[in-house]
Image (cartoon, rainbow, N blue to C red; front, side):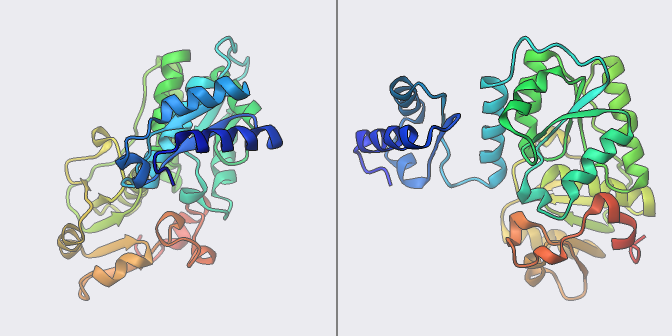
Length: 315
């Protein structure tokens, strides 16, 4: 807790760094230091000058969702640590951005996404940030394309594009039909250098998907392509509004969630949303660790490999 004695925090971090020898230091905050006007960048500069260890300051406030903080962290790594002289690989290669355990947990989804890229002809250089070392992240500029699988990876994608002219594709390869669209988008991004966001947009809102923006938009597209039914997205976390379709919403209030649920025939969301779902609306549980923690961890499906079986009744 920062209550005015910045030197206490700075000296404690410097002492801990001397004992632990980390590769870098991150200073992040909560509501109290935000209220007292704590200067994270200045503290990071002082700590780095004392320790010689790269130090990053993040003006987090505790008033946003995990997407905001994770996005800051991945973008900072992309801007500070990547090798600016890294040459492109001779074979086609890609990075996976926004691969956080809060979105993809420990059920093998991260490996399935990597296999999708490998089967599509891309060597996976780095996975931000599940399963890769800092040394692997440093070489991210060598990739020909980046696959952004959650909103947490958008900042890093833009930073890598600015530094290395690497285009990015937004989407999670869920279901055979949507995965094929993502595969074609990767090919198009590499050949044209332009960013791609494959997304289905059928009319109607028969299905309502609630969750993190990019994962939910990918799921909605997979459902539309496979079932022919319109699927809208309700996003309670931060997401670039330019990615949302006209029928999708970013919301925060319980009242807005209830109103949107009442207009759907089927709601697909984490079980903790079910208490506010109207009883006449069908509710399909799709646990997400970012929402319900480890309460339903054993029930979280790997949608990259289990989409058709998990949604067989819907499709």
